[in-house]
Amino acid sequence: MHLLSYVGVDYPMTVADGQIVDQGEYVEQVEFAEAVEAILQTLPATEQTPQLLVDTRTLQQLIEEKRPGGEIKAMTAALSEAVTRAYDIKLAPRGTPVPASVSTLYQQMCAACHGATGLGDGVAGAGMEPAPANFHDSERMNELTLFGLYNTITLGVEGTGMASYANLSEAQRWSLAAFVAGYVTKAPAQKVKSPFSLDELATLTPVQVEARGQDQARFVQLRAHPDSIDSDKPTPLAYAKQTLTESWLAVENGQLDKAYQLSIGAYLEGFELVEASLDNLDKALRKEIEAAMFAYRDGLRDGLAESDLAQRYQRAQAGLEKAQILLSEGGLSPLLSFVASLIILLREGLEAILVLAAIYAFLSRSGATGSMKYVHSGWMAALVCGVATWAVANYLFDISGASRELTEGMTALLATAILLWVGVWMHSKAHASNWQQYIKEKLSASLSSGQNIGFAVLAFVAVYREIFEIILFYQALWLQAGTEGQQAVLFGMLAATVLLVVLSIVIFKLAMRVPVGMFFKVNAAIMFALAVIFAGRGIAALQETGSIVSIPLNLPEATWLGIYADGVTLASQAAVIGLIVLMTLVQRKTPA
Image (tube, rainbow, N blue to C red; front, side):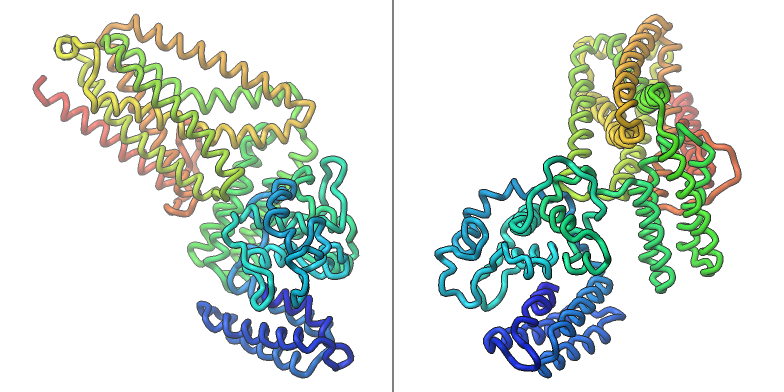
């Protein structure tokens, strides 16, 4: 694609009216066209490979015939697009380029040839053939894409003075591409809205933008200063609709595996991020859309007829359209923003509080205060790791929604296993004689290393699995609340934090006053109940990634209890309940 871009831009300057203007450049174009064919022959074969090779040979023939530059430019553009589709190539940066961050890097690595101000007049570039690019040449820059500039920086240009800078990070190369594109325009005075997506800024040329009837000058400015755009990412709902559309196009092209993966992405990367916000306005609509998207996805997995898939697809898109209208018109009032913020933190935090309060109460009653440091280490590490995971997902790497849900699902199932262990262990101490014996064995006021590690891990997973999801929900709520409701969101978070602290103190005080036998029975019951909840949520998260099949049932749901209208999640919870019953029965028969 780099070579095709180079030929498309430079060939028109080497031939005019069927005559070669620059023999050296013309020979280079011939060599690059031949290299394109050679590279395609080394790539894994796809259904499109035979046609790609035919088109590449046609390109070579057109160049040999010295056809007009416009024909060659159109041919290279069509070939680039075909290669992109054939190999599903990502053409846009993972994150927003920041040109100002590489100004010093440009002076260190590029100015010697391209000049301190990008005029192509650097001392080291004197006498080079071809001469270093002049980034102030608007005519030439208007024929280039940001992706093309990125590729040139990454791969260099064989046979010229332009070396490869693949040793730089991906973010630095994209930022350098935007930096040099900025020599023909000035940065906006303040943050602005963009009529172009980041993908369009990376893959379109200014000439193409003008041909589409759009503002070329605006495009040139924004592709050179993408960090000045107020928001370069589509809203979650817009992303869901767009990705679902791409999924349907894949169905029409017979690419069912690709369509299935896109349908998962439409839910995880798009709709799931606004579920909490939509629940605040119309919970029934949220459930309707979720069911429709899952039905479409399951239909792809099961190989339904295209007519049936079309109905499911249209139902999902219609639901997303309703949600988009509702969320755009039904912005949250400050009061509703406060309530939504309060509920998010309370709902997600209460489970972790129950686990931590139960552990603290047990350690206090057993006198094992020396072991509390392990629990504190567990939940504090979870806070740090949760925030770090979110930061990495947003600013460093493109962590997919599938990866996020897979992490949540596996963490929930790990928590289920640990909760079962703790629950059975606490149940075994329900008899006073067993408790007294245990205390005699633990006069050192410290538990065994295995138990300490177990409690630390439980504290970690109980908190970590909630943190990332809480942050994602608050991101969506913050946008939906708008400037008028954002202060209410903060107050809601504060109120929820206070309530959680109060609840944890109350639970702790009550636990300390309950008789020993009842204390352990209640604690064991809490552990068992949370194990059942986490099992349901863990399986549901894995189902959302497509890792586990779903069996929809026409039953009521209570998702906050991990109860879903699905046969697989209910069966897994039934298995956990059966295991709890079996373990407690065995424990009763075992001599103290």
